[in-house]
Length: 228
Length: 327
Image 1 (tube, one colour):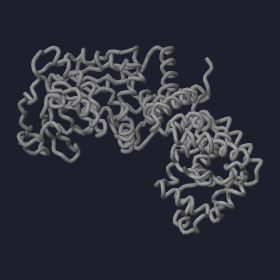
Image 2: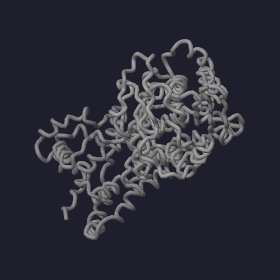
Image 3: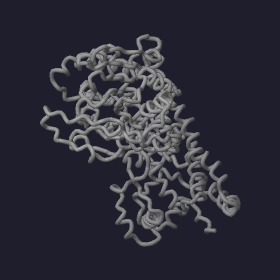
Image 4: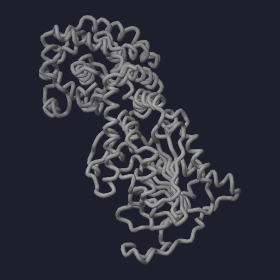
């Protein structure tokens, strides 16, 4: 097998299986190994990625994304300009989110173990819009927020990594968050995931100026529940 | 047996590379080649050192765990056997090159403790040899001003030195040395080892300083392994012994096939899971295949001046111990 993209590492089925099992175990036993979560996602996600690809091809905006292959990092997104946007717009909210949690769009791991150029791009796009998903849903990056986003992604995309994180993540929530999770957050997010447009089909880069409430409305997303 | 396209490409590459290697051995002694092997890649010579350095900086923390997993613990047996062949003596001046995390050096000192039943003295017992007068490039060195055991030299700019301990560990990579120093502290051996950051092809020591020179699983990472052997010859005293433990070639084709399959299938994924680094362990399995066979390496050692050169296979040739004497 030849290298299909710059970060590609060709692997046989047996090697992928080993990676899947090993990274699965490592992700649980050593949560600091975020690279293991990436590896797990890549080695178990091929079916889900194909599903996403089908959905993207059928949607005009999604198909545009597959053709343009936009990339989100600090050189393609003008963070300074986003900061200047009026409050309440998608761009400004994203900029606030990044500075509040001192994040950078460059922190995403490159895709290694997917043996198809298009699917590798889809995986990359999935990782790059993760922070934007947080912003669109209005979720912070604490455990509850992450689990909520994983539920959303799990339902919309079907990636095993998201589904497993969504199931097992809540086990680590404290009692206050667990109560909120079960009573308010979970019903809301499941409903939102099912009725909203697929976020992979959204050309975020063309919507920076849009007020976020209007953006959510267009996606058929309900406003997030109030904070505890 | 059904072989996939990927694997047959690998075998073809191995074949071509081995042919190239064989072809280059006589040439290398006459002219210097401009490219060398980094695994299966051809890279400019000055790049190999940097790339190897990157590999070891990356794997340093998980190095010992990975060794245990990859060899299923057998590397410990190989190293114990290696020390058994050496039969260390407390009066020797010993240098372990590419000794990184200290596996061989610790075993050496432990063997001495077990067999010479004396309380280990923290001060070195050697008398420094006077600097040779025929080397105009080395200035007079006042031994008493040489720093203590934690001395770290930059081999290219410091003048040649004498060892301050009768157990010296040299490695080109500071991360590996740091791990080694830590382990030495944990095992109460810190005061008996001198750790030096240096290049095996250009050791910072004066001629004829050591009775015993070892290099274990390091020489295949060096850009010019013949220069490493030449340096070994230079720093060894007359009567000194050179010993090299290194991965080698399996003769039996069936076993070789099984070993290749195991290596290619398991080692890089294990490297990814344990150390988070696929590429370094891919490099490892490729560099093993690039290294010359037992006989070829023996003839290189002989050509550097060593006599009574012999080798012993370990685990059917997965590893081999080469030995030679400077007489």
